Each structure stands twice: as structure tokens, then as C-alpha cells.
Image (cartoon, rainbow, N blue to C red; front, side, top):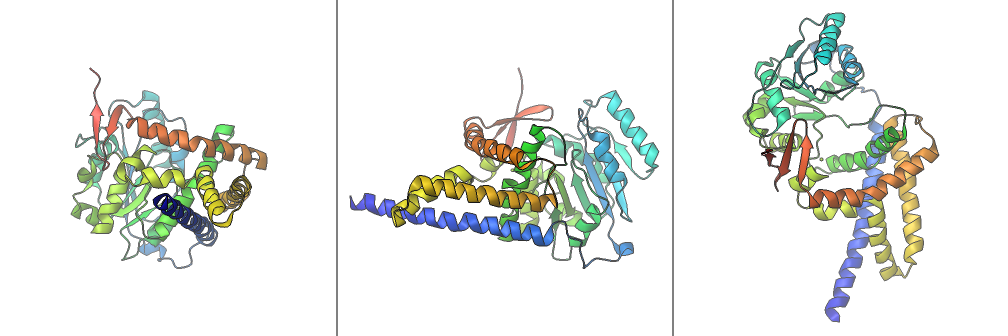
Length: 367
């Protein structure tokens, strides 16, 4: 009985600590978003002295928004940049190649070129496709940016201004462009609430939490860590690149960081509210269900504030749409997490892979 009582006390203390940690994450991400996102930088390098950047753009075969996304890169306001497109082996459709070449001609970007094919150096198809462009990149800064990314004219300028002497890597916080349909609303709610809260609070407290969708890094530092080829064994190459540079994302995160098997589910609203509600009942004798409902409501409101901050203005959908999307997203998290634990295989680009603990992977070959 004494052991059980001690265990319950420990669980109650854990629940109270969890409450403090999660709400610190809420406040840190909201405050940071309000102070830094959608703000124009005041301490900028002179335009003419911005460093040269080699942009590696891994493309994929079927992408209906490809040209619209690429157009935003043609309009970047930057003095020195070279763009190296990469074609995904032979999976490109002829129409996509024609559209790409037409866009290059329209914008008369003679210094930008299409680097066809890839170089098989490991398990990661993105690294394989980037290798030819990486080997001929001439500038000190490398910007790896996925084909699905849209940018504003000052995106690269802002990232380069963050690249001080003490910084080896700058990455952008991914978000979703305004689109029609409830699926787009659901996606936008995720990328504007849970995702930035985790990423921003982690980075503010010193944890390596990087997304490889848009990442600017120093080529010499990456070369010292073995270059791109050193990360070809990993599926989540962005995390391990950041880890290597600092030292000199649900399936991927589980295999990269086994501790997330415990940490990730209890950081979600409904599970956290139950755990903290039980702790509040055990310590303060508060009603669990009343606390659960109040805690979820507060979380819902703070997520809306976070979303508005990331959006930088009015949302393109109603508060009712937000409420429905938020509830669906929060209800699905445990199912998605358990599915990731049950089946550690993923389909990515043109292949299927089985993830191992530590972030490495093996390709599943059909026989």
C-alpha cells in the first residue's frame, strides 16, 4: 500500500509538472510568434553584401501546384543566387518538363539550370536526387527547399540575414497557403497550432528541432560532417544534418527519438488534459471532468491565438470551421501515433522503407 501511495503521489507530481511545461510551451510559442513572425527585420546586411546562395530544388513527378510554387522563386529579391533544379530520375512527366522549361524561358533565368537525374549514394531518395546539384554548387550557402514550398520576395533575404557568424543553419517554419476546402483547413490548423508550438518552444529551449522543407546551411560546415552523402542512410536527413552542424518529424520522430514514444502522446490536448485532470483531482480534489473540459477549452482558445499569429492576420475560414477542424485533428492524434508505432514502414516518393530505431532505414524491395 505504501508503494502504491508513493506511486500515485509521483504520478500526481508528474501531472502538475506536465501542466507547467505544456503551458510554458503555449506561452513561449505565442509570444515568439507575435514578436518575431511577420515582422520586418531591422538589423539587415547591406543588399549588395548579401552572400551568394546555391538553391537546390528537389522536384517530384506529379505536382499540380509546381509552376505556381516555382514562380514565387523566380521573383525572389536577392542579388546573388543560383538555382539548381533536380529531376527525379525518369518519373517526371513530359508535360512537367515542358512547363518547367517554359517557366525558365519566360523568366529568362539563364543562370538557373535543370540538373537531370540523380546519383545513388544511399537509401534516401531526396539525397540521391540532390547529389549532382550539391557537387556543382558554387556558393558558400546551400538552400535546400522542397518543390511544394511557396516563398515571398524577401524570404531568402530574411533567412540570409539570420545567418550570422555564430549560426550554421537557418530553417523556415512550414505553414500552409490559403486554399479552398475543408481538407486545406484541417492542414492549416495543424501547421498553425500544434506544429509551431512544438518547433518554436523546442528551438527556444535549445533542442534540435529542424524541418528540412526549407533549410539554409553553410556548405563548408556540412562538408566537414561528410557532406550530403553522409546523411543518405537516413530518411529524416534534416534532423541529422542539424544535429551534425550543431555538434560541429509521427513515424520519423518516433524512430529518431525513442523518448517521443512517451513524450509525444502526453503533449496532445486530450491525453494531457486527462493526466493533468487526474493530478488536480488527486492533489486538490477538483472534479476531473470539469477540469478536463476547462483545460481543453483553454487549449482550444490558445491554439486559435497561435494560429492567428502564424497567419499574420485574418483566417480564410470561419471560427466554426476552425472548431470542427481542431476537434478532428486532436481526436486523430492518438490513432495516428499508435498506427505509426504498429507499422514502422512508410511510402515515400518512389519506394517503401522500413524505419529502424536511430533514424536509419532500409528499402523494401518487391519480389
